[in-house]
Structures are given as structure tokens and as C-alpha cells.
Length: 120
Image 1 (cartoon, one colour):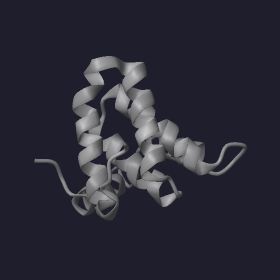
Image 2 (tube, rainbow, N blue to C red):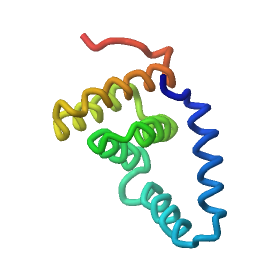
Image 3 (cartoon, rainbow, N blue to C red):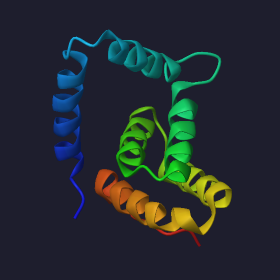
């Protein structure tokens, strides 16, 4: 069974704090670069988060998928927009993405339970 969003956030915060306070400054440089890549710029932050989500699905990283679903929603992504992102990932990555599509759908339903609707 996968972690809840709150458990994931708590673990991520704890471990990121441990990493960033390890005294190894190269970790801080990478984390700063990663953070900067998703800030509002010529592309809206929402689109950047959705691009990160599609990439995470193709790369098959469930922690990254959960992170980017949550951030995409915080930036205003709708369920239908996320379905399209999931579809792009499936098209690019092929059938090996299906287990991660299942994970993404599960987490989307946990984060947006009131919107559990199907397309006709």
C-alpha cells in the first residue's frame, strides 16, 4: 500500500531537511536548480508542473508522480487537464507506464475525491 499524501509530504520534508543540512553543498545547488525550473516564467508554473508529471510517469517514479500531481493541482490544474497529461505519458512511454497510470489515478482520486467523474 502506498503512502498517503500527508505521509509522503512529512517524509519528503524530513528527508529533504536531512539532505540539505548534511553539510554537502552540492545537494543544495541541485535542489535550488530543481526549484527554479518550476517557477513561473515564460511558461506558467502549472504547465511546468504538468510537464514534470508527464516526465515522471514516463520515468516511472511514483514519488515524483505524487509530488507533481499535488503541485499541478495547487497551480490550478483540473482533473481533465491531468487526464490529458496522463495520456501523453502513456503515449510517450507505452504500456510500461500503465502501472504508474494506475498509481496516478489512485492518488488523483485521493487528492480530488469530490470530482470522481468519468468522461462519456
